[in-house]
Length: 282
Image (cartoon, rainbow, N blue to C red; front, side):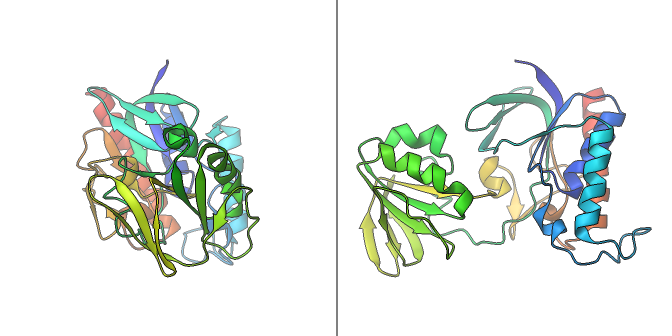
């Protein structure tokens, strides 16, 4: 397996800024993200606080970013990163189907506006999972709850339902196509309960006994992706070099805190990349 110099997680303005500068410096990299770039940026009606881009729409800005990436032949790997493990001298980056290795990592994952549910982080790896492909077989013939964030992930819910003996399906959106062989719960999840491992979920409709809980989300908070990463008030703690508390891991953009602005994200992406380059030189 080839080990790249830099892995960038997130294809918003911060991640793209880091990727462009990484390419210019002739370092090997992998850029994880959505091929459509930042949906948050795309929804911006006008960008009036970025020097030189007055009156540009978010969609136009994204188009310019994509054109820049294409001109440098930078590809976006559209695989969902499910876990990052710091090894002795590299990072192992897991997706549902592959494993990658990188000497340094730049987290540009944005922020997850949805709050975590009590017990969600505490039971991670002990009954809570974010990856159907990775952990589905562990619950073959058992009872699970699937908390689904959007239609695009219903296929994963259907896959889990083929493995489990019983599946409770809890959609976090209005329009949904009920997968086969599941029981839909309309109530909201309030808490994941258990002792050493998950034993059930508490909802506004009552408590349900389950062996595992799958969260099917578009984004997962950075401190869940990378265990041990220091976070405060939902943001990654960094210094002026965008370095985190984990050696070799840097962060940039909205995930490091306010203000949530494109200009800040682009600047931090640049700093994070140069900090990674300095570490690689040493």
